[in-house]
Image 1 (tube, helix red, strand yellow):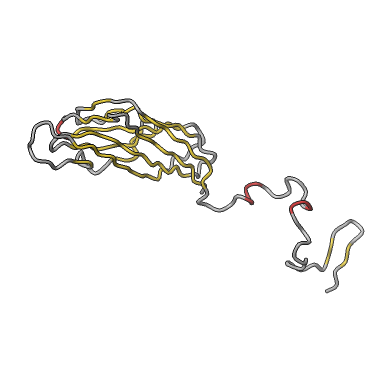
Image 2 (cartoon, helix red, strand yellow):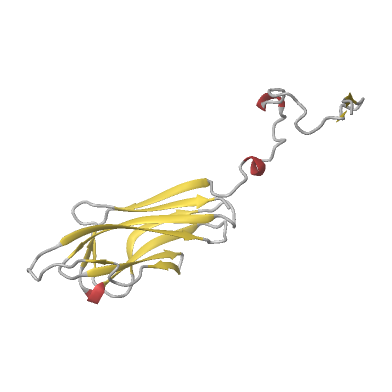
Length: 181
């Protein structure tokens, strides 16, 4: 079929892929003719990153999950976005002491470690012996909202023994990444 330029500017007879390479480039496309959603389509893209840092030393000595002071707030751009949460925990534990962690979104628990011995020291019974542990966790959350969300980390102690967090000028971090659907 022959290609024809009509009086109204339309073209007939042009097959898909019929223009030679380099004929249409960014400068020849009118502004806003390609929707941002089409250009950025496809899941798995990191849309934003937020990080929370906590350097405050504290001690938790209860089997009840307790706020650590580590939190971060993110506002998803779409209800279909996922939030990838990664966090570290730095703790100083004594002989045969352990701890567990929870990730809380608002007031909803979205992740709990296996038990209160997720991080555990196995040492001899020598008095005053301590071990420092730095652990990390990851959880993919589906909050289904475009409202601001605060995630926070909670810790509980095995047998209510002392878990010393962020001692010796250490820090913990909570990294939130919005992943497009």
